[in-house]
Image (tube, rainbow over all chains, first blue to last red; front, top):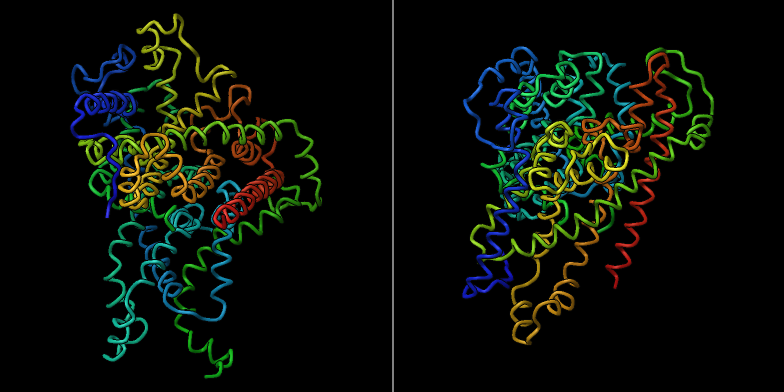
Length: 283
Length: 304
C-alpha cells in the first residue's frame, strides 16, 4: 500500500497552484534538451542554430534517411536489437535459475557462492574491460555479435539474482509439495509451477537488462574498435560525430533513432522500470 | 536426526548445482576471470596487440604513482563524486517529498518527466550536450544571451574552468530521476499512522521532518549514498562523449585515463594495456576501499 504525507492541504488552493505551476516550469526546462534534439532531427542545419523554438518550419524527413542509410544507423539498429533481445533471454534464464535455487534450497557451498557474487557488485566496468577484450579475442568471438552479446549478458547481474531469489523465497511450500505429489521432478516444478508465478520479476529484470544492453557504451566501444560492422547505436552515433562532424541534423536524427525506442518502452512499462530501480535500495 | 554425510548432501543437491551453473559460467568469464587477469596483466609490459609480453613486476605501479596525470585524474574522480552526490541526494529528496503528495494531481506526470533522462542512452546525452552547450549559437548560450544573463557566449566545454562543473551538472540532470525514485521508495515505508500521530501531537513543518521522518528514512539514506557514490565514480560514457577528458585533460577522470592509456594513445606511441591495467587495479582497490568503509559505517548506524 502506498502511503502519503499530504502536507499540501486540499483546501489551500493558492499553495497548490503555486507548487503545480513551479513544477510545470521546472519540467519544461528539465525535458527541454530532449525536446530540442527531437525537433532538431526534423530541421535543416540552418534552422537548428537559428533559434530556441521547438516547432520546425517543415518536417525534414531526409535527415532520418541520411542517418539510417548514409551513416549506417540501420545496421547498428539491428545489431543493438539482436544484442539486446538475446542478452535479455540469456540473463532471464540464467539468473532466474540461479535465483530459484538460492531462494528456495540450501546446499553445500551456497554461502560461498553468494559471498563471491556480492563482492562483485561494485566492481567498476573500467576495471574488467581490458581482460574481457582480451578474452573475446582469444576465443575468436570479438569480431562478430556473439562475443559482444555474451559479454553484455555477463556483466554482474547480482541485483537480478537477488530480485528472483527474494520472490521465489516467498512462494508457499505447499505449491511445491503438491507438484511433487503429482510426480513432477525438479526441472518440471521449476518450469511449470514456479516460473509462471514470477512474471512480474521476469518483466522487471527484462526491462533493466534492456536498459543496460541498449544504452551500454564502454563495452561496445572497446569491442568494436576494429570492427565498425558490429557497432551498436550509441557507438554509431559517437563515430558519426567524428566522421560527419558538420551534419548536425543527421546526427540529431541518429540520436533520436537511438533514444526513441527506449523512451516509448519506458512510457508504456513505467511500473516495471520503477520497481527495478527501487529494488536496488529496498533489498 | 543426524546430519547426512557431505557426499550425500552434494548428490541430493545435484539439480541445484546444475541450475547455478550457466550463470556461474557467465559471471566467471566476464567478471571473476577479468578481475584476476587484470592483476596479472598489470605486471606486464604489454601493448595488448602482440603476443610479446614481458614480466616487469611492479614497475607499472611505480610508474603510475609517479605520473602527474594519474593523480590528477584520480583526484578529479573524487571531486566529481563529492560535487555531484550531495546535490543529487538533497535535490532528489526535496522533489520526492513534493511528489509524494497524493493531492498533487500531476505528480505522476512530473515523475515521468524527471525520470526521462535516466532511460536515455548516456552516450547520446553526452553528444547532444556538446550541441546544447556549444559556444556557437548553442541553445544554452542562446537562452543566457536572450535573457541578458551574459553578454558574450560562454565556452562551457572548451574552458578548463567551466568544463568540469558543466559535465557534473549534466550528470546530475541525467541521473536525478533514479535518486528521486530511491527516496520515493524510502518515503513510502514511513507508516501512515506515524504521520497521523505526529499531526495530532502538533508536530508540524521542520520538526516533523527532523524528529520523525528523518530517523525512519536514515537507513535508506545510507544505502542511497553508497549506491550514488560508487555510481559517480563510473562516468566514462558521459565524459568520453562530451569532452573525451579535454580540454588539456581538465576533465580527465580515472576511467578516461585508463581508456586513453589502453586504447587511444597519441600518434607514434604504442597502446599499453599492461600499464592501463595497473592503473585500473589501483583504481578498483580504491573504490573497493570506499565501499567497505561505507559498508562499515552502514552497519554501525543500523546497530544504533
